[in-house]
Length: 226
Image (cartoon, rainbow, N blue to C red; front, side, top):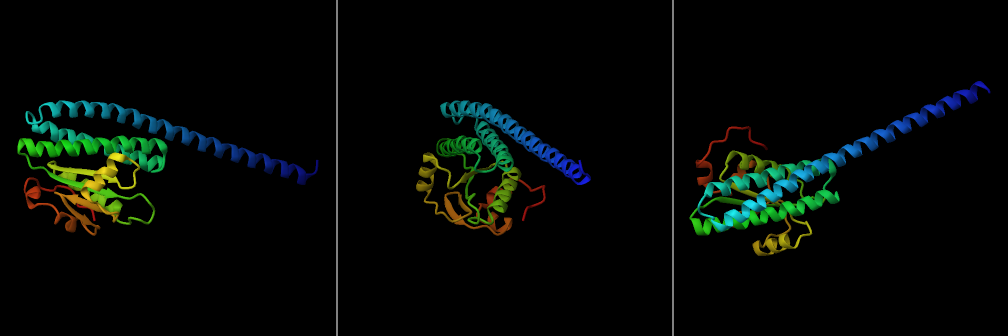
């Protein structure tokens, strides 16, 4: 065996070892991602069942404990945070993520309808904001910033109800909601206290669309996003 042949074989062996290592690492990371997503999915399934049960209880006696409705909306928002994490790690087009998003969207619509019922039958006047975004590349450059701004407002003002929807999600109930509210495909889109607005520049500009009574009930204590 010549020196050249031996060196070539050594180089080939090293290359094969590197490729095998990379393939193993990729496979391991994929398995970890799948396991992590499954954990989130299992937790979401449990949370969903719990929230659906709470919906049924509140629909039976909606005015007996108004605070329960507020807590329920906060729990729905918490599921949204978990879904956002799943989207970030698995991708917005992942079939499991899309299935989770459909369930979460239905929960939000149901909570929105329950909130309207509480407002009509119990005399409460919560501030409600519906946010419609797009995940299609290039269709909404400011959607991420708008989402962060709404998350900040929801965390700062507990009386604010925020519902976020992927405008292009293929879900009949969502299509009906969009039609009823007459939301155009211009992003980001907001329906705040029944009034439609489009576009996002700064948090301060967005706050102008909300009633001043919302900000009189709480004081911001965190750094505002831009």
